[in-house]
Length: 92
Image 1 (cartoon, rainbow, N blue to C red):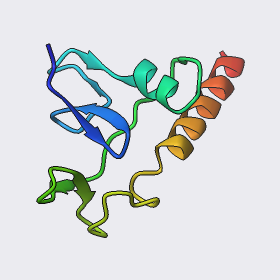
Image 2: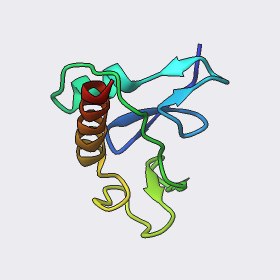
Image 3: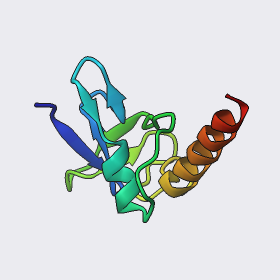
């Protein structure tokens, strides 16, 4: 079983990947549901480099924030991934 981490309300494996072959982990359905989407076959998100603050929360290394909208814009990333998957399906 993969060890998961919560980074600003999205789930990733300990390698900061939403889909990881090393851990045999796929968190796309859980993350889609958490952000109000039905599960879809989309490209996985990858978390930016983070550090853990004194409260045990992940914060982006670039801005030092636990709720950075630039680095942790999961809903926007999921929306883009879903649109790209839909577009690719139409071409197939």
